[in-house]
Amino acid sequence: MRAPTNTSSVMRPVSEFGRNATLLSVSTLTIMSGATISASLPDIAARFSDVPNVELLSRLVLTLPALFIAVFSPIAGLVIDRHGRKPMLVAALVFFALAGCSGLVADSLTGLLIGRAILGIAVGGIMTTGTALVGDYFAGPARDRYMGLQQAFVGIGGTIFLTGGGFLAELHWRAPFLIYALAFLLLPAALLFIREPVRTVAGQAAMPRDGLGPRRVMLLATLLAGAIFNMICFYMIPTQLPFYLKSMGLEAPSLAGMAIGLGQLVGIVASLVFARFRQAFGVMGVFALAFGSMGSAFALLSFAEGYNGILFAMAVSGIGMGTIMPNFAGAAMMIAPPHLRGRISGLLVASIFSGQFLSPILSQPAIGLNGFAATYALAGVAMLVAAFASLAARLTPRIPLRAEGGRS
Image 1 (cartoon, rainbow, N blue to C red):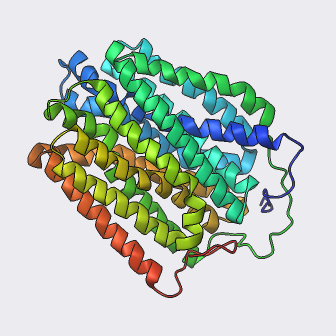
Image 2 (cartoon, rainbow, N blue to C red):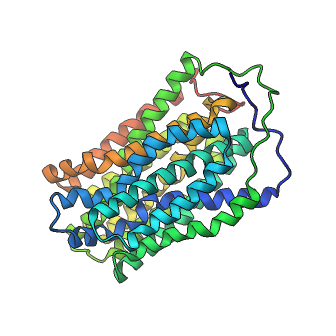
């Protein structure tokens, strides 16, 4: 049996600025795994209108990567815990660029879906490795600050790539796929600045060596279930908002891109103060804030009568966008002992993208039965219930999510 390792302290010499900048830049790629082509979905559906079930299949072009991320991420976590982080990251960046750009040439819906499946495998490797490396390089409040900054970079990527994708989609539905080639530009930085954590056996006495223990298993299961639920609801924005706008007579693809980009912009601001929120409110308090803002945003979407109402709802959603993902990641790293960081990172990534994949499968029948507004209202109610449950947990004595001196 391999000895448990501590990967958070001794590192080979490397430029800390270059390392951190590279990780932050790589984190912007994850927003591109699906939502960059959101504005192209109506045109993709029109291009392949002769394909049976094209309404559902065209949405799967956006979310199919999530299924393969969910399947591959736990495998990636096991591999990087046993064989190291950097080889997986470099290989995943190459496949990300190649598979992402395949939409430029694929001339069938099947070809598009195959490219998106390979893209999902690559994203699973990138996200799992990136989350584990953050756990390796940072601890405690420094980790909270970095995760907030990381989410800000994701928001910056979202603002640029989603808004840009909307404008590119007006040129041609294939044009947004070109954005995936940006991964090639990050390869030299990953090769130069990312170093494998040096593995030692120091500092392991207080950590569980054979597993998490019943209490941590329960906490992890609750966290993963919450991640699935959050993404089922949240991903109704990129998968359904372009069609909702079209039903309101707002057909320009750039309008969907700008609305989603506005949410990302507000999310940048929220993520930059995530560490302060985390210190003031604790893990469950931040979950209450994030679920509450998202639930309110969905309620506003359901009542929106024009584009201004849509924009206001998306601005409100940005508070949740900017805080909930670093809170999930931070909570997972609090639970994870060092020798299981890769595997727990993989499980978290799998849960997040399972929710993404399930979102259109669950929301599309509901929209067909009840319409867009009623379905958004139902999602809003569900997220507000989650907010109240999180608040109740925050106010209950002895909340269990505690580690590394953090607040619960």
